[in-house]
Length: 329
Image 1 (cartoon, rainbow, N blue to C red):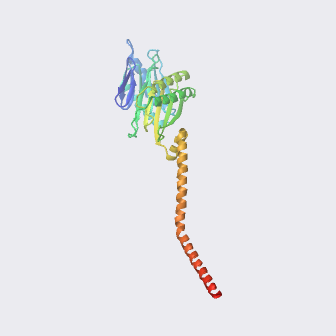
Image 2 (image 1 turned 60 degrees about the vertical axis):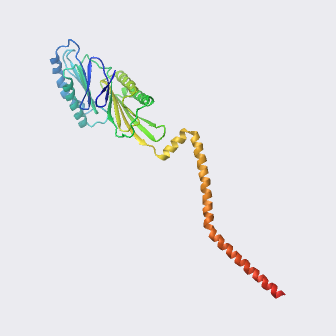
């Protein structure tokens, strides 16, 4: 079931869990299984991990810590800063806030996670998993309020295909487990260009096969209409989040310059090329005639003066002939 959560989040809800929005962050809390005991022991193991996690993760953008103890009470905590160039100070600040909020919001849950715009923190026991959880989140609605549209299914499928192509690249990318790509397109009327920056990232303690499976599952959620991701609205940022991986889409749009617009239209429409050629030939012919007429008009006074001089010369010659004739007689 897809449920709309206030403050621009679309969430896929799973059984025996709760999802809520907390101060601009997506918070996921799983209820403890029936008959779970030793909550105090679990909290005792977990809290030191969450306290140390931000400082351990900040230098590299990732850390995964585990406590000792029995399997039922052994805790783990994981932190990931999104992207490959987050400054350590920003990463530390983001993770510190997230770790504080996830414990405040989920209390004694045996599995929980929190996602913000810049990072992710999760904790659980050694024998819990949330592989199937996915949430589609709108991080920013964008600033281009004049271009409010509903993304078409082909647009979303195109972005899903890009995400799917990044999954094996991220899974095979050594310790970083991250890949990016730009998806570009031109609108049907050639007036706008869209560039969507796609980021695929996995928690670095996952095996390549686990990373691949997680990202493929997230990519399939991208193509399901309609959840706010619009490749034709500049400034939109959206993500598909899970406990093991992260997909992010950032949209930038720009008007196509007139020379390129004409070139694109000509390239895709042969009939348009013929029309443009005929129109250009016709305009060139009209321009040539106008130039000749203009030059002729400029030469008219000089021609009239020349005609007057020729007429005067002819008159003088005629007068000379008459004088000669008179002298002969």
